[in-house]
Length: 208
Image 1 (cartoon, one colour):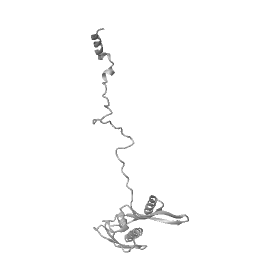
Image 2: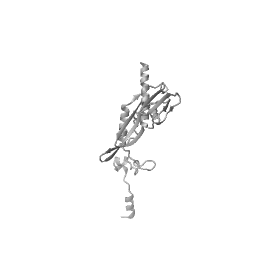
Image 3: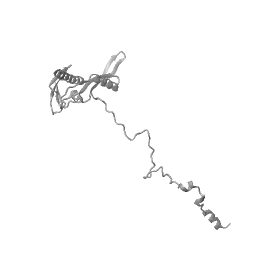
Image 4: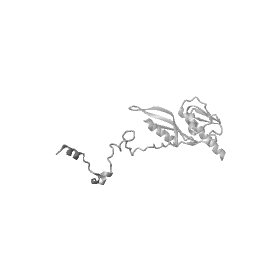
């Protein structure tokens, strides 16, 4: 056999007529064409469990602010047992406010108890259209005394835990002054709530 004939046999191409229609119609795909993007990086598979949009956070009905937290001890036969006492103010900034206290061996549990107590002791404050109090009022709780005067357009002029009570109640124009020298933040918050509660009772009596 001549070398030229062998070369012709090697270079011989099968005609398209003898091939099956599936082989002729389907061209060979480029390698890694479906696994790569335009930038040349492989395409990552999306996790169906993870959603593209984050779910909106549900805002709680009542805002709260911690007024005081103390570590207290109880003397028992084996020594002393420590626990935490928490006082906080809760309100919806629309006229509802309350003060609660909670006590437990761990701080988160004490905060949860105090918030539950504040919701239980919630009061509704009667306010004016500009979110102020209608008239001057004073109150006394323990050794704490407070005086509240309407101050339209001047903002909240108050300190200590009285300011936290007024802000969470939604009052924006009032002047509050502690007339006592007590530094007990829990009592100062309670006397502020007591003053606002007396104010609501006064308004209810006038409306009748």
